[in-house]
Amino acid sequence: MTAEDRIRALPCWTGGIEIAPLPGGLSNANYVVTDAAGRHVVRFGKDYPFHH
Image (cartoon, rainbow, N blue to C red; front, top):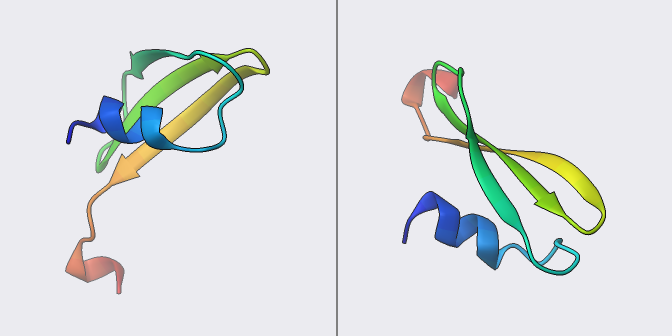
């Protein structure tokens, strides 16, 4: 499952969505998602042991 697939599967969206990568982030993949309610940022990160 891709990051885009996971974003589409989130139940919080209103209507259809558009997904665009958001550059930057050292340990996260960031996306701007636009739906009928506005623009939102989605961040995906990995479970790094040093965060525990």
